[in-house]
Length: 125
Image (cartoon, rainbow, N blue to C red; front, top):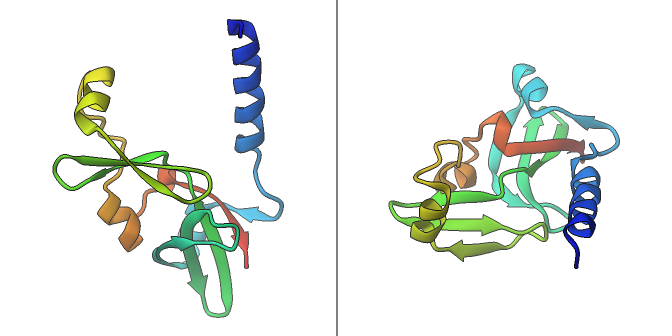
């Protein structure tokens, strides 16, 4: 395949994935309103994310992060279908030139200690 075709396909994929869901709320706005974040789990579609709730109101916020550090020397990647895939951290860090501080810890994601940068759109459930 030619490079221009690959870039065109990549552009379309990024545009589709970056489109916000209908009736979506921002994770930051929900946090400011006092919503509590639950542990990471799978939504009805199988996507990974968190249920944030306050009273009777609940939202499912999708995982935006594509990878996470696991322990001292492990690493996992996330698929859109909600699966975690083990990655070779040494090879990854050698490729990018060292540790990336923007990549979250898997334990923090699982416990619901998330940064807004790691969370995608939140849909009412």
